[in-house]
Length: 94
Image (cartoon, rainbow, N blue to C red; front, top):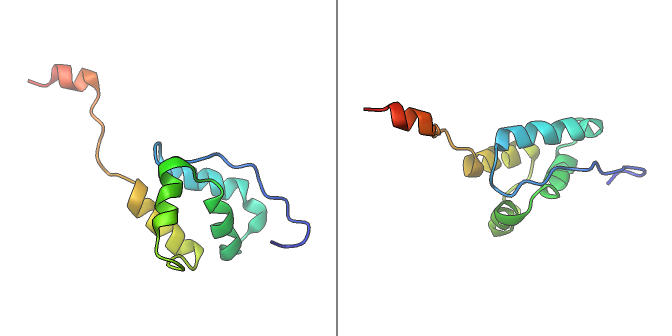
């Protein structure tokens, strides 16, 4: 970490919720990191708990070596394009 760097307070992601929103919130909180991809990866891991942290621990050693790869793998694992159907839609379906 750079000298004098103060890590931001991060929302925790447990594998539930919206991973795209989590990344957006994370980037916003880390705006002082700029384009330092290595630091982004290290800080991003600090925002994991539960299933998300388990996913990270189970990755191949050194398989994530830059921010772009971390973001891509994270979204591949946690982002679903499945549409949620509401109870109203189910009730109205005939």
